[in-house]
Image (cartoon, rainbow, N blue to C red; front, top):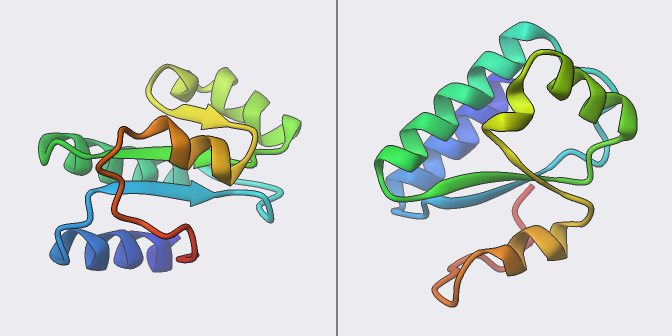
Length: 97
């Protein structure tokens, strides 16, 4: 999760504040990781950006619901849907992982 924190930090340094995190390959998550995501979400929103999640498994989605994080994060079935949810000034190309 530190890599994700650093990767999002690098995007912020490049003024890319609309971020989609593809969780398709993630099969578990712990409280520390959720805390990192929440901290990055808050930082991005303070910069008028956002962090959206894509491709969560039903199991992962249930974890987010149980701990109440589904109230804070927008979750999309696909990476494409998450990208399209941003308005017309999306700057990403959907290739960063």
